[in-house]
Length: 359
Image (cartoon, rainbow, N blue to C red; front, side, top):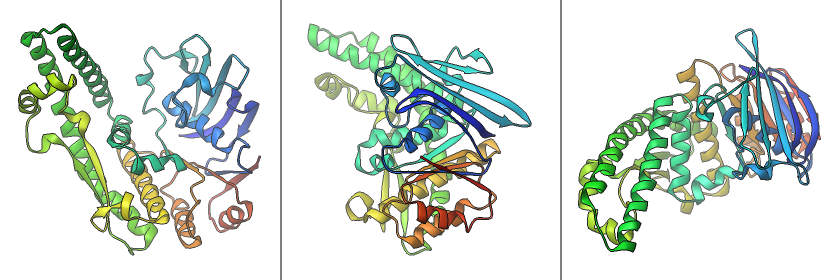
């Protein structure tokens, strides 16, 4: 599948614009603030029904306007797919596929496998465990609808259990039977989710290591470690053992919602011991491994979005990345850059066809 055309109406700083795309490489060149990242975000929006950069949906409407519309036309197995996403203030977001509105947004996830590499990925290193869990779950969820369903249900039940613990504390009461029901429901889902995450990481880690090796030419050793309380104990045992603690804290302190991924450089946390260039390389390798995983699962190359991906990298690593994405195993690629000369010189070395958009 590739994106043939996108039309943006009142999306962020773009009032009305249509772009026709090359099936291989498309590059947006321009100064900061011209809307390069917004175009990539619109492509992401069509794949996931949400912005990558701004989770507050109404803030993606152009300032002073009441709605936005994103319309994408895709080529998929010799037929056209039309995806439309629109939002009007005061109303729910609407996603349509070939004119038919989705009843649930989750039914759309996975139709357009997409990977984005952006400066915002720095949060994966600098922020807390929830950011890394979202990355892991986002990759799995693109190819496993049951995992996504169980995860949404788990989060809902977890919120209900936490609300119950607060209720007990505020009213100086306790109903063990009610709490036990939530425990059972949590365990039913957490066990399956844990096994999926564990299996995913076992597959994903070697792919990530290989990608990092390709970019860095084997000069550094990196690793990922999946951290979970369920490695050593069942969730049922964890809930029973943390019962008194949960009553005091008024929230659920154990479970898969505490899982994390350790990012390591030479066995040390890359957050503390990695240079900016090493951290950037680490994140690019992580996302290229995501690309490889999705391609293997779906049988087709995901759309790859490279937003300012060359910033803070030396020319040698830029060249390595360009040569990687020029290989046949990549599908359609969108990239942005503020440095026209650097990008044009790199594009001219490619075997693939490309389109250059100056903003």
